[in-house]
Length: 282
Ligand SMILES: O=C1O[C@H](COP(=O)(O)O)[C@@H](O)[C@H](O)[C@H]1O
Image (cartoon, rainbow, N blue to C red; front, side, top):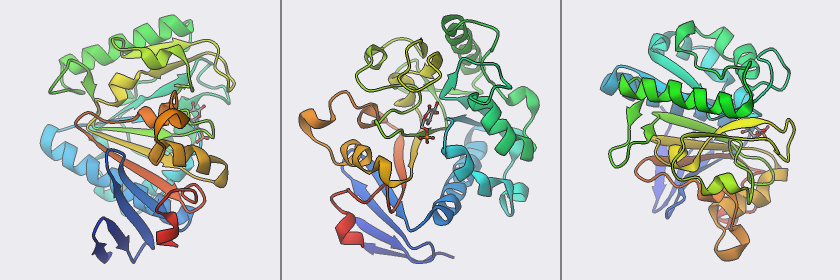
């Protein structure tokens, strides 16, 4: 069992050599010594949320992102999770997707399928990816329609304070520019207040056409985790977690603020190296 010592707001998990801190309004920040430790902690976190959600609701509705996140989820494919997690209750969604064929190297679905989903006994009909034969706008509308149907049947929960879906867990990565899902800095979709899924055709990071959950959907989730690794993202992580005032205006990662749910940041040492509290830790 990991030993957790409590130093006021600062928690240290000695087994994982993990530093955790509670940032007012910015959730819990977990800084890991290396990627292996981050992967271990992330798998534990996801498995615990799955267990709690299956116990409470009978299902676990989880939204994935693409990018580096997927390889960091690798521990879920091995022991003990392959035996202890009730995979039959998982329903998979994507917080964002590139509008390309499902077998295209840029597809977030393909990435997750090749490195995660094909190694887990997930029920194929529980995997909800976008329709890759449609335009970006059509794909976003159809994906939102699918999600609305699943909210009606409570496969996906509904927010207690609005009619937005309440995913059990939304897993996000973050780009060096502070983008999350396919919400890019200063883009007009950051203003979206009503739609659940929207689209862009001018992504600054290729490919240009994407669909994405909107901020209200992300911020209505029961749990949001942002997984960030590498020194190239340290400044964006600082702005997203410690930033104040104009320096972080228009930064999507700074706008992740679950209304009722819980936010957890999973960082490695390099991504966390510019945080105010980092010197305290090292
Ligand atoms: O384009 C995307 O980028 C982000 C970040 O990716 P990473 O490789 O820098 O972690 C990813 O979260 C998103 O799903 C993806 O479409």
